Length: 250
Length: 138
Image 1 (cartoon, rainbow over the protein chains, first blue to last red):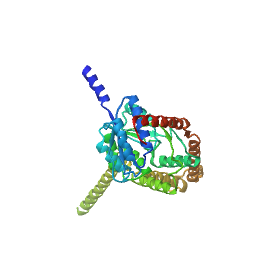
Image 2 (tube, rainbow over the protein chains, first blue to last red):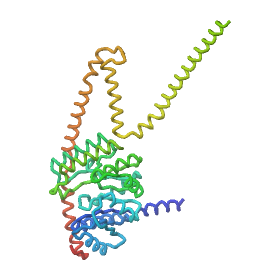
Image 3 (cartoon, rainbow over the protein chains, first blue to last red):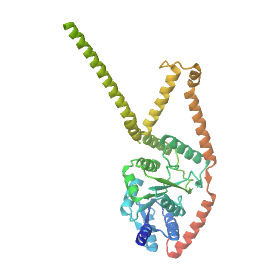
Image 4 (cartoon, chains in turn green, orange):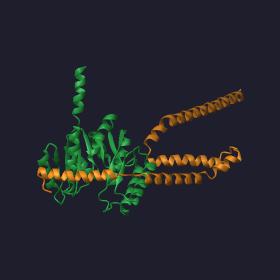
């Protein structure tokens, strides 16, 4: 009896969390996000590693990453760069191959996602044994900073249309701050064919198809690059095209 | 004698026809039962969202058509027809109002994370100082 309890405890303590950070021109932000990750993982005591997947950034992101590796240790900071910008899906595949954890956390490296939510993701996952935990900006305390009315309207409007058409069972589909079980992420990335915002949506939709359980944690999204708005007419059109494709094929 | 046999054979033929008709009905009934209890759920589970919508809208459309245009001669009271006839437009308008109200409410109650932004600024400063101490050359 005691030995079984002992085994259960070591099972929990052998959970390791691999954080995938695809970067492109994040010379300024990379040290900050790594510092925050180390801080919050250190405080919470969970076992972790950070995998930086740099797509040949011309601004020297890789050099900064190497310095960080010297500071924090090459068991905590792992570099797996690629020669050129090859897209998010392939970055995840590449990262998973080198991940030694049994859980994978994906997030943006531009400080819009704050690592303080990661312990909450982990707790939520343990609470429900979820296959994936998604950060949501649209429920509970979740929210955004730095969005004007136009941006909010487009975001909520698009989310409403997505909910009506796809009925996905998750409130935030285009968010990219998530915790996955490693084998679940592998299965899903294999099956997804879209790019950009739609890729993140497709992951959730496919997860639903495969009967994966999804948990949600409210997060705050601090948009510091809203000056260079990434939401022009082209983005909206490609989002709608992707949405209709998912509607007709899943 | 032959007349009697002929009639007897005729009765047998009719009986066979009736029996085969019954068999056919049983087969049809069996197939319908199979379809609705087994195949339908399987088809529904593997349908795309688009097909689900097409299916649902056709069902509603057929029901509406049956009531409004009296296609099955059901002799329903005229009240039913009066109510059913404008239903599609009415439902669309209700859905439109619901959508506007929902999206409007959600935009109005979209949380603005001022605290989070300020906390981030403070932590950025902290991080830069700490990293400089640890030897990072920015």
